Image (cartoon, rainbow, N blue to C red; front, side, top):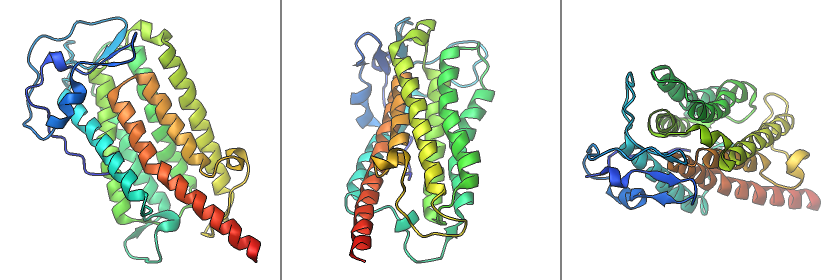
Length: 311
């Protein structure tokens, strides 16, 4: 999990290329997608007038509220989002041939291994801590929409960091995997938190928007599936037992990777609720990362059942 994301900025980026979603058409406005190819160019601040506010859309722009400590770094947000999409494609292509070397695919080497509970806590912590620190350093009037969306993101990683890591019975994780995941969570935590707090605008009308309602329903449904599936997996083994077994119950009766399915549903629900490029790029990356892993788990389970039947 994770990759080193180049936070280089877009060159000569004007407000005519601001990252904008139209709530009425559900489409991108401006040249944000076309400008992603310029991420290797010099860091430049956008010139020109700020786009007019609209009650029916969310827009990425530089906030001007007094007391704001951090301006919207739209070039950085675009570059990280583009990096997530590119990294997702690369991980997808790699995992079509090779499994990520952790868990049941980690191999027999015991060098440079980190206990699973420590690894999960450290690698997931930035995704919770960075947005919280950004929130605490932000001085602006309370805007329910963006705080609600930020809380959904932090809720997932609060569970991952402080609850899941405490009860997991996974195998020790390779150090390089933990470091990569830590780096990814740091970049992504900043991107999601900074976008919501300093770039996006959600008016009161957004609280009644069908995308917000639908997205939150999908998010919490996916989170429930994910947590319940993790519980089933934990109950398969006693502490210290690393023997793999086929999970039964819940969605595992229908889907080999029910826990992965739940997490993918979570992040696409979050993306729909925020209707933002950073969230959609994160959901895409998550699908490319754990989708192939679910496929490899399914193949492993089929081979395991076939071997058991022969015995």
